[in-house]
Length: 213
Image (cartoon, rainbow, N blue to C red; front, side, top):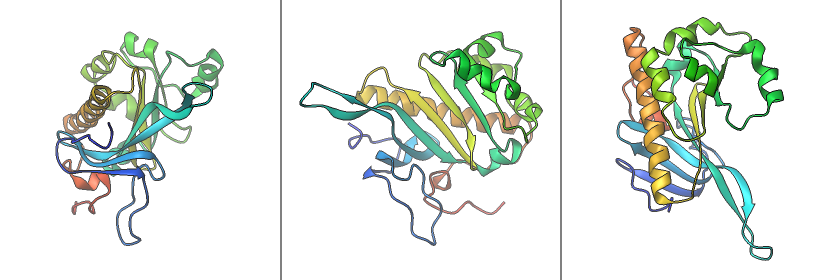
């Protein structure tokens, strides 16, 4: 099903994602199973691979399958605004997990968002930058996604995890459509704040260098 995914443009499939040549941009989802790289959804370039793999099947015919999908894209422009942040669904997180992160929690004006998600930044980062980046419309949209999701910025890369309800071609397409929508909305949030951002393109997938500022 992953091999057959077409995306919105050129997409490369690899059974296990490797690294780019030494002179090329940094690859995404290195070592990830069933890696897709390229134009995954309209105006969204990145890479996707299996995540949270588990054993499934009968006793003598068990196989390792994904329970989630991980999508990544290079976003150094967003990382200049908020160096690192995590937004994690609290749906299946134990109370102890949440208590460990309360000191770094970022609260927003949306009660629905605060109830459904735990947003944190590392201690060395100012939480105000993240609070100012997410508009009320953005927060409301995130709460309408009917899957368990996590997303954030780490190592100047946007990442998005989608918990699978089923392993199907339709679910893959839906996951990548939402990853692309979130990527686009983050770009629009930056544009509304008057912040510099690169146009979406193959550089977000590590296929070309970023254009000059």
